[in-house]
Image (cartoon, rainbow over all chains, first blue to last red; front, side, top):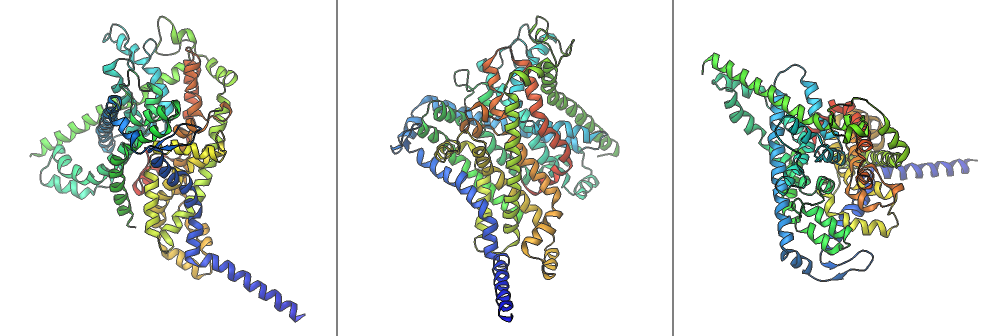
Length: 311
Length: 282
């Protein structure tokens, strides 16, 4: 009798110690908690990234094994005037996309931060495009831009500003701007939100002190708002630059690079090369040429983001 | 500067603000208005000689066509499955990871925090080509599981990152006293940390839901079967299929925008606070 009881209790103790070992040894617990995340990120981010780097030095087509060809993909790209053109497009697209989003986002945030009736309603409306999927926004704008039945031409001809409709996405001089307009429509709320949060975090005392010194609205803007917002500006612009320059959705749906590659950007060109034409090595190389620029932003951003967290 | 001119400059700023808001609201709503109106028009009102700015004879015909004659219901169902599964899994994995990175002291903690930010900032356009090879290699091409797995690659780091900020704002004394009372680490996480961060979990759920609902590049690379397509890769094909498809197309965009919009309206008040603790992809 006693022997059985003793055996049970020994078993019991052993089980609790194992469970306690798992849950109370901090290192094991941390490892267990991080395990799913580590596994996922290794499989779908770290390994693919390494693989993409390797692919860019290979001649690899879909379904066939790759062959190492050194820098030949990169040489092919850099000696191709079309690639140079697309690289310039990407820079243009990113700089103006980010710049216009910044200006409109700041204007909206400043206006929303003023005391005004119904501000919550205005804020809700201005944030709506951010909740609209980019694919949906692009398709809707494709219809707005329609040469014969679109809203834009309809309004402009009704108002007497145009005699006949314009093909916004086919006209060489207008196509890129039409694409950028959609990027701006969809992406501005991201800036407005960050800027509004930043404006609301500026201590009221700073404005009061400036008012005592006799500063008007413009002075307060230049000497209080802008300096206080600098960290918010930096982090928003850098995040947005990384994600604007690498997003293919708007271009892919509106023009897919047409007319004559004038709206083509590198990530979408890489998509065409790798998926449509099956040249995966070349496609990877196209993306990798953006990497040096992205790395600079990503390193600075990581430092800032970790700094904010105090980690 | 005199008091009068200061008042004047304040009033001027207010007026400029009002005009700015007016213009921006028109610019924001115009395409959406056109989407709604088109979806309610008859074909003759959409393509006719004189196009109207609003439907003269409103009809739900476009919606009927969309649901009865297209694959939209399949795309919609797939999108719901993928977005819900991704959100559910990201919440669990991210809560565990964020807790470990903020509350447990272990070697390599800083390294993992840094690695998390790097993976979050890694654009998917750099990864889609090798991912196609990998996912095909493990036989997950043309499956919803393959999509969920790929989406976890951006939702998990992002959600963990957001949650880390929230977890750090909870006073550690609460957890310490619970542990003195005999609560285990997992008990602390479930009974104290998670209930206190419910708004944060809501924000995180919102982001992973919308990110996976909107995802385009992985979906168009990893899936080619019509039966596994999600909304973002399914409905753009309507344009190719039929020139006169704008009515049902706008009906489909409207319906596809509704789930993220509902979540947005519900979680609105948490979003701004969510932004102040972590940065958002966009």
